[in-house]
Length: 168
Image 1 (cartoon, rainbow, N blue to C red):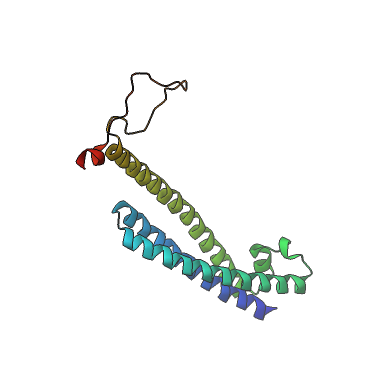
Image 2: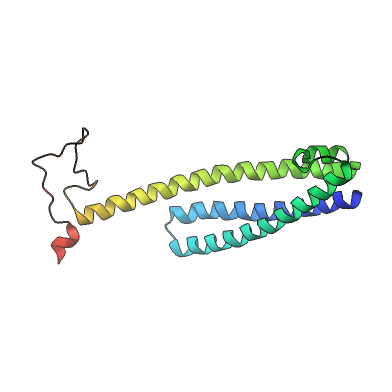
């Protein structure tokens, strides 16, 4: 049993390393989004995909290990938590498991926050790009609002050629 718990500690330590790397990439991604560095953004996305592949492999190993530990303890895998495992582990491994649990929770929380911030930045950048494109296509109606709030059309509204059309 102690060997399985030690394997779990090693696996979670590797899991934490990969998640930490992913978190660092997310912080870099925020900077890259702000600076509109599309080439670097593409590289980061590729690196993230490789990290997610590693996480998938680690998750499969973790699931197999949890199933083995649950079988040895007579507990269903779905009911076996890290806290329960730590409670039954030798003191050193218990401390390691509890520390890993705290660290993994903190990383997950930070990842959720940075993902939300990055999404907001990307949404703002896309909205800005759309407005700029609409300005080039139709300078009198940058938001392409052909209808009023009640859904009717404005009879006086005329669509004129945009900046690009006037240049040709």
